[in-house]
Length: 264
Ligand code: GLU
Image (cartoon, rainbow, N blue to C red; front, side, top):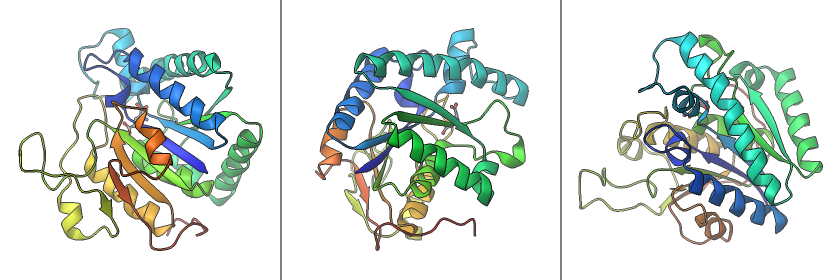
């Protein structure tokens, strides 16, 4: 299988913004092992801005664009240094690809992105993708990596995209506030009722939340790609997800694979 794993800032960092070393080590170990079993693995990672903030020691996420972009530039190096070191321990080579919305919207750029990713997979590397936050200007921001992960999955015809986050999946209500909330294991259609279940963002450093995940799920399903939302606190859950076991919330498309990506 060709699998895209997206990991959010809340999974990669502690509440301080500093790296959650144990978590990232586990993630790289499990992804390396799944790759060793013969699957193509692609990582879409957030956390550049959060890690930049942690490294410089700011107390909260900056609001102005130049500082945000500076934090992303600092944190992206730290992120890649960490992934390179950890994946190397398991003999895997990583490759950084940074994209902006223009690279996905424009057909020529999109094809080029596809060619590069395909070649990187043929070369048995683990492509690690993030938005190019340091240079993207407002009109070219994707803004969050849930959508980016699905765009990447469609671009390279992935079989599955797994969004790792700080909650077990989609619930009938916010489990942090309502103890009767229960996990929804399977979603076959993104109805307005399902969209209504999404709350706001969870962590102070991330930008996503359930709403962006459900919008991303809708897009994945339209293009025939399976999607799973699962808890990134336990990266070993990836084994079960790949084996098709019931973990988190699974979004099942009506048709599988093959739809051509366009921007309509
Ligand atoms: N690209 C952003 C970063 O690396 C994260 C976007 C997101 O949180 O989804 O900081």
